[in-house]
Image (cartoon, rainbow, N blue to C red; front, side, top):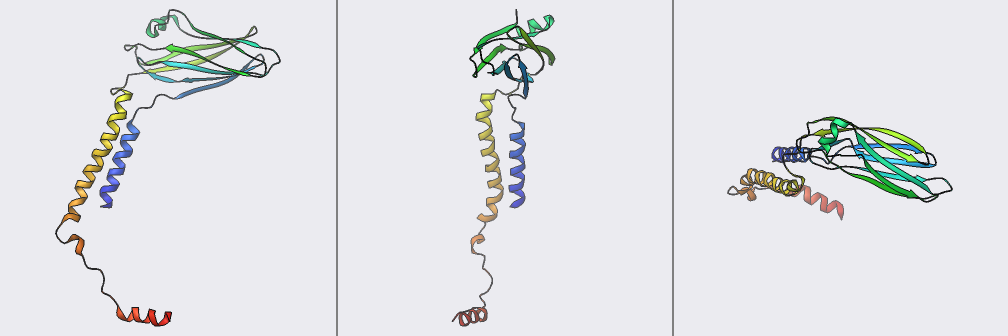
Length: 198
């Protein structure tokens, strides 16, 4: 029985490990003028999926700071991502406060060849500029959509447990399996315990 349960656990672990993850993390922290900037982005993405850049800018200065963001790639890669021009965003961070910004819609086409595409993220504040290299790896799209996994995984887990139960239950369903006698009662031991307790 333990061997069957152990096998079932291994199969469940293998299925969970096989579920595709959304992406890995690209994190960078830089300082531009009086603004501390944290950049979050995936470092790989599936074909035909959005790669979004999230930015948190903390203004440590005493005056409001205007922030400009842009993301660009090599000219030959622009058609593969549908980028006629750079992705841009602007925002203002009050003194001593923070602002959150995003560059969205950076999407490799369904036929974009799997490869690493060099992007550049530029952050401009009050005439100062910081450039970050962002290598974005494109991999082949998943064979099963993410929404489908949420339906398939519970069904597969139930199927595995059903197989395990079918393999184990016949052992307990045999005639007389629940009437196996226990060890004989030792009256001398019981009597000695009773007298000692008195």
